[in-house]
Every structure is written in structure tokens, then in C-alpha cells.
Amino acid sequence: MVFPVLAQMHKLLLTAMPDTLLLILWIAMAGAAGACLRYGVDRLMHKIFPTSLPVGILAVNLSGSFFIGVLFGLVASGSGMADVPEAGRIHPDYHTLWVILSVGFAGSYTTFSGWMVQTVELLEAGDAKDAFWNLALSIIPGLVLTLAGIQIGLRL
Image (cartoon, rainbow, N blue to C red; front, side, top):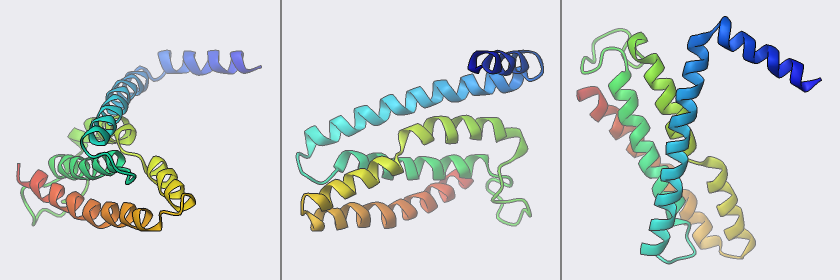
């Protein structure tokens, strides 16, 4: 039952929506790159800073916040022009790039679920202080870095 459905979906993608299939492939490749980079950054941070605090995911989520901010600023309508009515929306010419890099790369690079699991693990281990810092050092700086990235991206 599943195989005929998959075959039909495959046929639809190849014939009726070739651009969609290509976009999905680009998203998958960007996602693979983001996942590999996430793993590398996580391992590197734990080697540099051996601590119970999940510094690897913290570094990934903060740098990902900055990246998505810069990317948004770069592809937003009216980049560099605060008085443009469409400022703050993805420019139609850059929508595909936005999807590939935000959904594919940044979506696999950053990790809310991993961050939450590590926070729960800290709480279950009785380390409420590191659990608190894991949350506090991610939320506020993540917001600040996203906003800073947007401003930088708008001016590039």
C-alpha cells in the first residue's frame, strides 16, 4: 500500500513539479551541511570547554541565531532602506535562497529539541544551576544576536 503512494508522489514530483523536487534536493543538501557543522561545533566546544553545561549546543544555537538574523536582513525586501513598506518581508527574488538556507541549513544546524533534552538531563541530574544558565544564556543572547544579525544583514 505504501509503495504505490510513494510511486505516485515520485511521479507527481518529477512530472508536475520539477522545481519542487529540485528545491527539496537543495534543502536536503543544505540540511546535511548544517547537521555536519552542528556536530563539529558541538564536539569542538566540548573539547575546548569541558563542563557539564551543554556549551556545544549553546554555541550552535547562538551562532545559528546570528546567522538567521544576517540571512533575514540580506534577503528582506527593502534591504538597507528602512522606509520601504515591504521591509521585513522576504524579497520574492530571494525566497528560494531563504527556504534553502533557513529551512535546510539553519533548521538542521540549530536545535531546539536537543537544547531542551540537555536542559531536562541537567535538571534530572540535580544540576538546576546549569539548567538555568543553559536556558538564560540561550534565550536572551539568542534574541540579541538575531536582532543584531538582521540589522547587519539589512546594511550589507
